[in-house]
Length: 287
Ligand SMILES: [Zn+2]
Image (cartoon, rainbow, N blue to C red; front, side, top):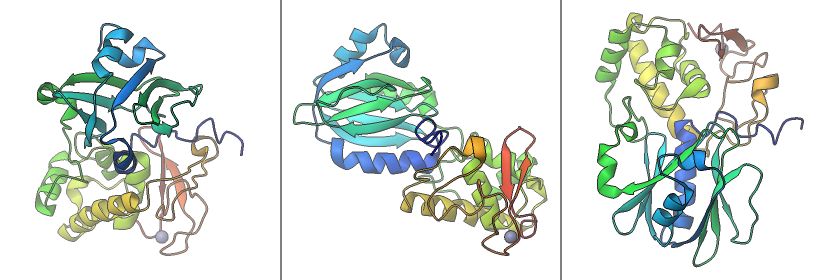
């Protein structure tokens, strides 16, 4: 159990399926709630505002009308043409609490609702961000329009997908992790998609056959849809320290070095990728 609570959520909530799972989960609870009191512990997390009172004033009293997502940003539509934008920190999450629940050690912002309950912004790495803007002003925020494909909402065809891979001509794993190509896959989903497609992450993206492009395209969709369906990579442990990655059964290779490949039973391998991250793969059936 060592390290479980310390790094329970490390590197996962900025992954696209995890954000979408959180959004769907919270939506039921927060829509139609009116914000009563707001507490902000650190000014850094609301640094787009002049100071903490300005943020508190901008948020207090508003009713939440919808909870949407733009790439990996969560956007709460509020009444009176306002919106609360939340970018979770690298280890952050949003947690539903009772109104009387005291703030946890890593809670940076808390909002209570007039009809009971509260929402806490947990941000252990202190690299998240919240701000209130006018809903019409959202269109001017370029960071909310991801440069890459949002594979959960955008429709993209396999010919356009393969055209972009051909144009980039770089090792596949790096291309999949590039946010200007696809949003929010990270190491975990890049490795899972490559396994699903039976492709080595070292292959150059321009050199795939049309059948391989199609396999990769299908892999992106199948892995992400399954991740959302299964509730994301729930309950991972300290995988950065001991490479153990307990998670939903849909994780086939990530963090599973030495275990049998679910397809061919050969041991899963781990190698340092060019960017220094650990790549998990089956050297036998990923070619
Ligand atoms: Zn295999």
